[in-house]
Image 1 (cartoon, rainbow, N blue to C red):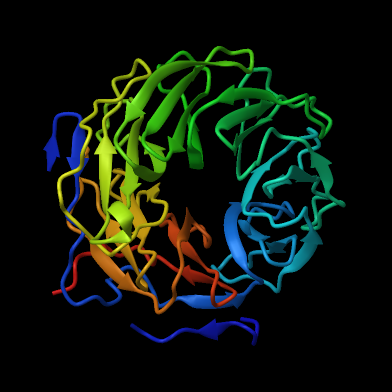
Image 2 (image 1 turned 45 degrees about the horizontal axis):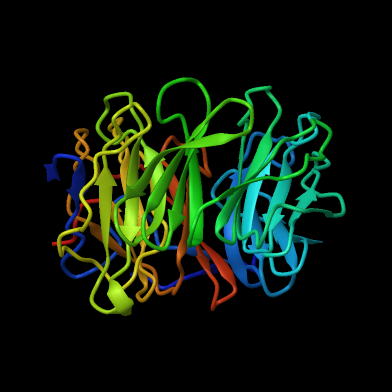
Length: 379
């Protein structure tokens, strides 16, 4: 392992909406996850995984907001990473997405920075070509990749100021003029999924007051399906949490005015592009604020679980799924790092998803390896 790697210190359902109690006893590292490994990266704001050098091992791309760049950290196959390769990207990139935009079999990167989206084509060896700036609607702050017009060419969907914009890919690394759809008070993320089972990607968009569901028409345009899922939501993740073959939503909630604590709600999908909904979450809490949740099967039982980061504390809450949409009480993994962004991915190919957290104040990426154990609440 490289000498620059530093080991850190040790350490139910109701109809339509499920709330999970996230409190736990004395926090410590639960069985199954190892203490974090720390990798220096400048001002990390967002990250995604992908195989950028074609060796069958997952690598990491990080948006470096303060240095106007993205970093590629090549994976070693055991959960550790090599020193970052740094590439200029726009102004202050705060979101990254990964896809093959020119059809050459190499992964490329898109980075949103509030003024435009930068496209960095991959060379297949872990390096990226110089960034090309693409106009992507007003104030682009979050970018995602999907084939929204079902032509086998990857497209971009971008959250901007009071809007969502779709950029259809041309298949050569360039994109068409943005198709912009107004959505009031957009302030966060979006997620793609086929919510009505027609084979076309749909969108769920976070705004200040609710989640908005847009169904894809198959030509790059969207129509409104549901304009008020939840109330005052934070970021979300899509997954089938009750095993019925229909996609559901797990949503982080922040407390009003930043007071009190946050919670995670699970909204069941109806399979027609709508979600069962109760407007206000009951008062069941974790830390003061929550980051974006991630979904993966952390304990290998074939059921999706949830992990979420507390913004005001140094722990990760892991909630195992029961298979019916409900989640078990949280295990708190003490990390010693203030961060808000998580990625779940199997970095060492052992079949157990690991966790990557971004430590913006500490300028590092921290990796918690999952050795295949069952993370249960601390006694």
